Image 1 (cartoon, rainbow, N blue to C red):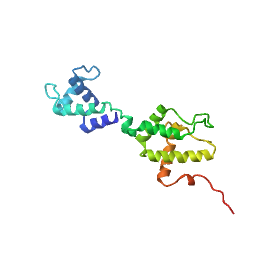
Image 2 (cartoon, rainbow, N blue to C red):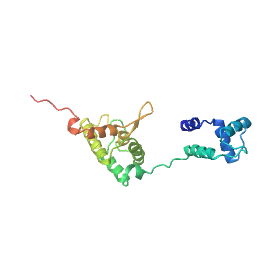
Image 3 (tube, rainbow, N blue to C red):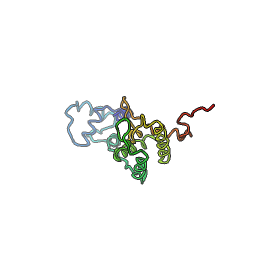
Image 4 (cartoon, rainbow, N blue to C red):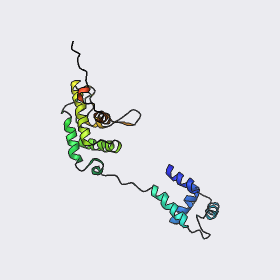
Length: 194
């Protein structure tokens, strides 16, 4: 909606003017506006000619505005995650243990849940599968050392909705640690021997 108003402001035309141009193009009535006053302004500003026919200028404007409302095709999972994404998702899920976590949730989530989560992840973060697998392994090694306390299941590790309705990704944080060179040896305390 904001984009449409920017177009109207840039072209110095009112919403009523656009409405009238659109209704002339579509040959429909305009019962909610004072058509005669709006037509005078449109003719004066070269949006209509004296015979109430759309000018080239008005046709270009209508094409531009209509372009805002065309549905964007949903990208396929192949385009977002790569050709063999199903295998990668299964491989990712297999990294998690076959068990119930202390939270009561299964450590592994369903593949459909993971596909949706990974679609979001790849659209919002720029990590490859290799980094994802390293990050996940590192996370799981640390969680195992803590007897799985506070471990997120395979879906929530990718993304989890926060209280404020935004999404957070522990996986993205762990991927960043991998890129920064922090590995599993750096993730737990070592005893000091005297």
